[in-house]
Length: 359
Image (cartoon, rainbow, N blue to C red):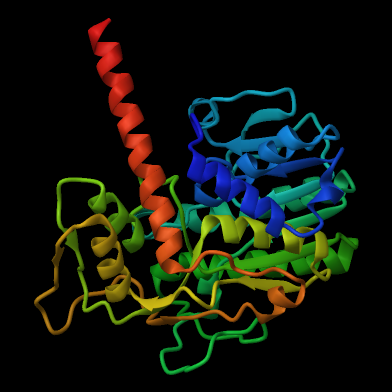
């Protein structure tokens, strides 16, 4: 993040301490796809922070569809950070080799599922297949696939968190299922490469992950709440808000990914969720509004159309916790950090615009 503030720097250090056995990456190279998104950008920043603290550095290859976007997000260039343009649906033409891959790229927001369900499916499946082929051909040490808690489907009555053995149900004849079903296919692709080609793979299934770096086209509910909190607008709850979700601050999520990469069992999946951040959508909106000093516009209808059929998405992180990972940010702390960092970013951007206009 441009001109990293103290809160964000502190989050990076907390994540480093919570990323178990990260020292194994010293002197190694790693490819992070989707590097300009919420999760991918934090991972890259965390690796850069590691490099500032150690002589034996991690070589980072960060991908995005746009080279310009990478340059805008990561203003600080270093000898160990390489920018790579990568389109999920195009054949890979990388002229380098890496030791590890964290595959995090792909559409992950509702407007994409609605406007481009075919592109969502093909981007996820073809991008993952191409990267698995590259990993197999170049004999990488391990491939980590970032899946989603949405693969557990539409169960509404379960009173406990989904564990990794739960198979769930996703409606196949719904275009909205382009995302969870393609994630399911990608997990099976990973398992198939592990079986047929002996590729070392591991899967993570994050819950709803939030943090300070938000892409312009991300229209998930928590993102809309956060954007409204920083603007001169009310926070709008467009449903009754009864949906129950696991949430996770990005610093915890990144630490869970790295811990799984280095300690997870081959061909296993690991949920990433924080047991202290389970709440309804209504309570999430109210918490953000309270922290930001904003009012909420509540939905006045008894029943509303909800694009997502998923009413219950609570994940159990017991398997990840057995590796030694622990969530460090409860819901309030994570949201406080997110709002503070985003607020500073907006102030700095406004100052830059004023300075540019005065020249």
